[in-house]
Image 1 (cartoon, one colour):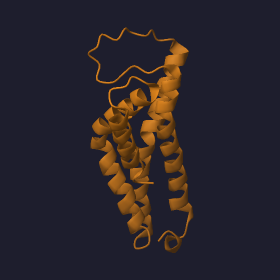
Image 2 (image 1 turned 180 degrees about the vertical axis):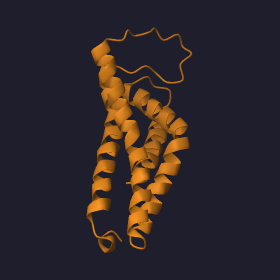
Image 3 (image 1 turned 90 degrees about the vertical axis):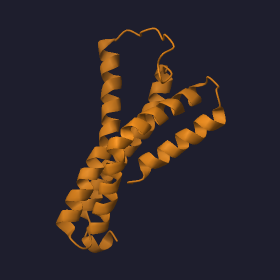
Image 4 (image 1 turned 135 degrees about the vertical axis):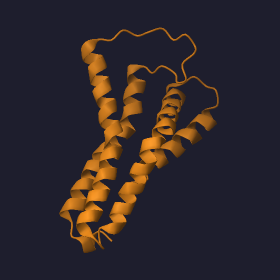
Length: 144
């Protein structure tokens, strides 16, 4: 679970490289993934390390390992929750679309593209919540 954002980053880089300079939904979504994960790596890399290290510590020191893993997994779950919250707020508030003046780092996404963009982050959040549940419910010897 801890390596999921890294895997998504690799998928986005490979997709952007293979799609070249095409202007399709897949290329635009992958470019947005790459941008978010590159700048988010400042927070996500330590969270991935905490989640993995906490999972490693659970058999030796169950309470401390669970606490460390939980901190990492909560941080990994946060981007998905923020993406969904942003999408819902934009739908409810009816925020206007500002014209793209060509200076944006990431392409503007359609509604379908925004849903495709949010899907892996939501899945990572759901998997993180499930992992937190497993870390706290399982015996320390069964996690190894």
